[in-house]
Length: 282
Picture 1 (tube, rainbow, N blue to C red):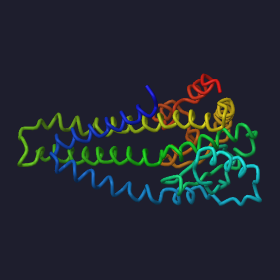
Picture 2 (cartoon, rainbow, N blue to C red):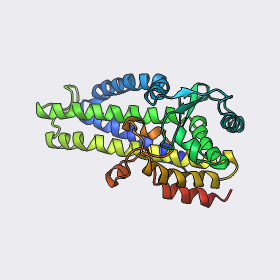
Picture 3 (cartoon, helix red, strand yellow):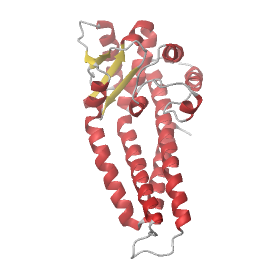
Picture 4 (cartoon, helix red, strand yellow):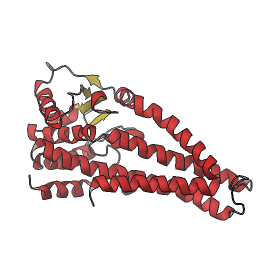
């Protein structure tokens, strides 16, 4: 199953969950209220998240005279990808990592840490940057925002359903009566968990897609594969103080590698990513 198809299927699952939960709780009215609230929250995130996340990590814009080699790599990759050259930012952090952000290729930015520039050779750095520009080319910020909107709406409906079950509510007056309050509570508890897991699956599918697109963009898969191996070791020895809400942006998960965190990670296992890249044979 291709990652593009998998992403579409997962978004469809989220939509179906929203429809079912909305129908169970408040019919079309309940679903509409939750959906509008989720859109309002994510609208701000979609338009301003790039500036917010760059400020959060104290990223400073780089001038080409400060890092001519880095600019040459990004310009070459952007030309191959057919997207505008994005501005490049430097994060003052020793933990090696990188991310791209921006709602579309015309409003994108690439950020790298001081740590990643220190440990990567040119081929590895090109693989990392190709991965990040692939997120821009594939419009993954839009896809993740759509997934967040649907998951957010499901969470709102679940909270509303919990209150409705406590006070004996359910469907609206013009809908079929007799909804089971126990079933409503179970749905209210399980739906947000299921929505979160589907949202994580969307993020993981996009990471695999960016790896594959990035390998083709760089013209070789082994550069990114080597970089991921280095990043896994180095990020564990030099952890990053990252906000969990932005962890999905980075090329490798900057959060703790504990078992529970890995289970709910926005990133697929590094070992599997490396294995898929090596299997590409380019």
